[in-house]
Every structure is written in C-alpha cells, then in structure tokens.
Length: 263
Ligand SMILES: [Zn+2]
Image (cartoon, rainbow, N blue to C red; front, side, top):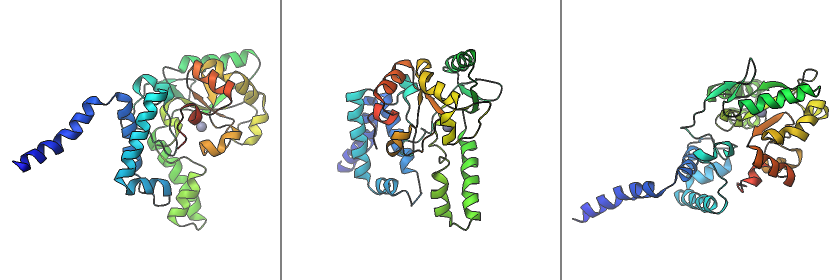
C-alpha cells in the first residue's frame, strides 16, 4: 500500500505540474534543461547550476515569477522577444520558417518584408546596406566554432583553453542569435569588415538612427558590453518589433535589460 502511494505520488507530480504550466514557462524550463546539458567545465556559472538540483529549481521558480510580473519573456506568442545568449540557449525544439531577404541570406519569414523595406529605404537615401550574415543553422555555427577552436589549438592552446578563447570571438553553437532568423549582420558596399571602424560608415550611422522604425535594434551596444557579454557589434541588428525597438532605443537599454533578465 505504501509503495502504491509512493508510486502515485512520484508519477503524479510531473504530470500535475505540466498541466498547470503555460507554454511560456515550458520554454523557460526547456532553456534550463539545455543549460544543464553543457559539459564545459570552464563555464563556472553553468557548472554550479548543473551541480545543484535545488539551485535549478530555485532558478526556474525565479524565472516563473518574472514571467508573471513582466510578461516579457519567451513564449510562442512572443516569438520576436526570444532571448538567446550564453546563458539562454536555443530551445531544442526551436523551428523557424525562412524567407530570402536577398539572393544569399534568409531570415524568419515574418520579418522579411520589414528587412527588405529597411534596405530599400536606405538605398533611396543613397545608403548601401549589404547583408553579410543572417539565419545560421546550429550545424553551421558548430563548424564556425570548431574552426575557431582549431585556430587556437594550432597556436598551442589546450582544448579547454582553445574553446574558451574561441567563444570570446565566435558564439558557441545554440548560443547565437543568428539561429533564430531574427538577426542580420549588415555592412556596406565600401566597408565590409566586421570591426569598430564600421561604426563610422554612413551605413552604420543610418542604421543606428533608423533601424528601430522597422523593428530592429542595435543588439550589442558599446556601453552595454558588461550586460550582453558581447563586444560592440555595430553591424548586428536584431528584430524585436517596432514597439519594443522604439522603447529600447528611447530608453538607451539593451534587450537583456528590456526583458529584465540580467543573468
Ligand atoms: Zn551577428
């Protein structure tokens, strides 16, 4: 009898929880599971989380409360608010319908018209915007990351150190915003280098002034590097929708701050 009660208790808990959980919370839970899956011993924060079941539960609970108070977290209806960074991995069940923004690159088809309009409006003002990267599969990101690791291995770094070093330049697979189809790297005809110098071009200045009107934000601003953990990228624009883009630009904040997820 006792065994039967235990059996019922054990198998009822997950089922019971699931039925009461909203889709948004499911997404958060998926993210946490994805984080636990990492085996990188150098990521101190992740390792700490993986080691303690209690910590994970606490984190899930915290994020659920955040859902209730802000309503600005990832859920299927909030598709353009998805937060992907080194602590928030692409959910394993993520999928997106793509469309070509030009002859080479694809984005989420829900933003393709906005992206095209932004590029053509800039052109009408004499500013050349050239997409040099947009949607990227996890497989492609894995190749890019491994190539970067290889470079450091060839320089004599140990595997772990090479990976850490590579991650400062190329996002680890599943942590790149390019997987969502909502991000584009945009350069210009006469300046195609992804470096700080690009910020001085007419294209970068035009984007900085106008991208929000089309729902795009400068995702990694110079003064937010300590929040985003990503270097200043004047070429990387991310779609969040016009209302959010307007608020983010007006308040001078970044996406993490907008979403209240400073983890
Ligand atoms: Zn980018």
